[in-house]
Image (tube, rainbow, N blue to C red; front, side, top):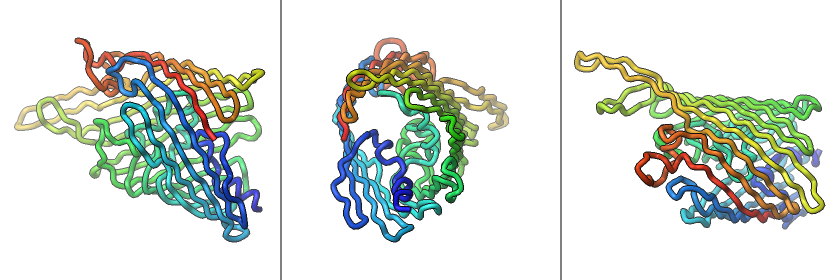
Length: 380
């Protein structure tokens, strides 16, 4: 029973932290505390006017702990902090939550944690340096790290099947941590969501789906996502598809009027990786394709007895091919390289969002440039 609880109570803490090892600093009388950390020294080489250009060095430190309360109840907690050391240095508490695990009855925790859709979008969030477009954004509800979330998880369907898991989540702040683009600006209130995953027998396949919804000043904002992944020792394949819809949200029109029109973002991501054991370490080449599109519905309306028509819009917000590799010299030290072939046009909305400083006469041109990411990672 205790071994089963340990496997469920903190199911993926070190994996989520990007660490393959940890330091056990205390294990006595049913109490266990581990520390883990990571230092990444990396640089993104691209046009100086593009967002994310330059030094991407950061350091993380985390702690996970658990305590045996009864034979069937385990208390657990996790805290993780990251400090960026690049030119736009910033600090963030990535995780801070605590809860109780009741074995086959599931677990419940509260605090800053991954949104419930992260379990699905994470299928393709495995690239060496880039990726995570479906997770780390403000248009998908409960797909990134989120504060003030209460989460119930059951990883074995009440003890009936180790292959089926599900989660339910409620957030009183209502959205992801990154809410700074033009779609909405920290206006969300509360949110709720759910996911389910099925490891399909012994095939190596896992299928997952999830749904989340919030309100933005009275406007319904929802996201659904579905994904598949296949994994064995050498080969990993991942795919996901999502759609986010903001129903009749406010859109500023050029005439100065504020229209209420539906907005949607749809996207899919595909990843293939293959591990090759070498005499020293393991090399994992990676290939991925990412495409997300924004759609704004058309609108007919009458104002001051004048009939107006505002056409709709469809524009890519992310579109690229990624080719890279991770070289794990051992479980503690890795080298990464990744080249992102940017397929955005300068007239695309994604090029505008991806431009931090306008350079030259062509508008949003920095946001269309390719990016080379290189770095090394030490982790424990």
